[in-house]
Image (cartoon, rainbow, N blue to C red):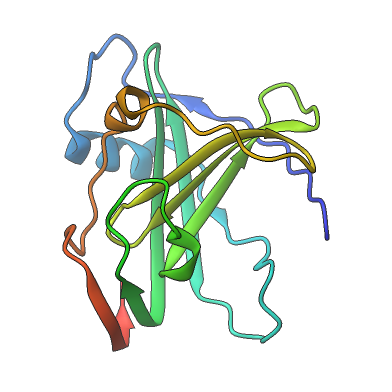
Length: 155
């Protein structure tokens, strides 16, 4: 298992704006955040690598994350949070605020089903309660309805 350490600076955006509209967040991230390209595709042996760009920002109350993905085929059948999101088309973000061996893991399917946890390297994840999960705001350009495999070019 590989362990990657990527240190980045995250820009503060929309300072003082309480629960900004997600369209405004998206536009602001496009304008003010540094785009981060996919660094690795772990756990899969083939050479296929979708085009993935992530944008990160924060304000006093929220962390903002935007993935822009181009895929040849997609699938999204899991709709319950903390389910097997990795079996669908998904992106992951790992954050260790203090660069220790403890980190937060956010896994979003392409319809924004979320698997979230906090863990120490090598240990089982601690999953958040329903209230925390429901506090996550999201928007997917593909909507939130499940679907079987679709072939084509998707963004």
